[in-house]
Image (cartoon, rainbow, N blue to C red; front, side, top):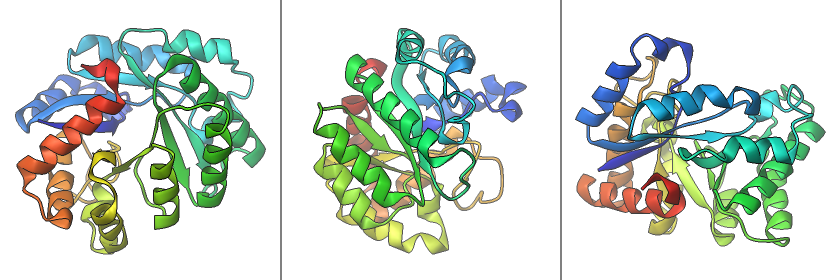
Length: 257
């Protein structure tokens, strides 16, 4: 079994053929999928998809791009959204200084709110971190000092410093199709040296399709190729990396059993 730790099955392009997308993932050996929430107030959309398929789960949260739009979301509202049997994670939340779609103070406030929700629920936090390595690491370290919480740095594109600081706090690091790109050598080097029990793979569908599908709409079945490249980087077989990342998935997303 290979698991897709992060995908956006609520993306409009998937709506007309969702059954086919999930069927192709199953045929490729993908055993579990987590479709990711980007707005707390649209949680019903991802929850409905998770309810529809036994092997699909979901998260609830506010993406940093939407932090200003949902600045008035309270902790209680987020906790209520998380109180659903197929919600296995909080987020995605975090910091994005590449696009800076929302003010940075709004992103940080939302990030900390989601950390508190993860702490309260015991669910892991799915973290979006782009061009904000130092601030993400600092917030994680500050908040970890207030009480433990699980988390994963999804679609990892940062440098080794953030990866190692996250792992030191007990976090996981998830690699997307970028790992397969010609420009992905720095990420392959990081993936090769991180502790084996902290690695995950994902699609981030419908974005970032791995080679040989680069430029096309991504979907969960393609995560098998990302897993193959991760195995190659670590000197393992595909079966070995599948076993490893599956074990890590269930350790982090405990509700997805």
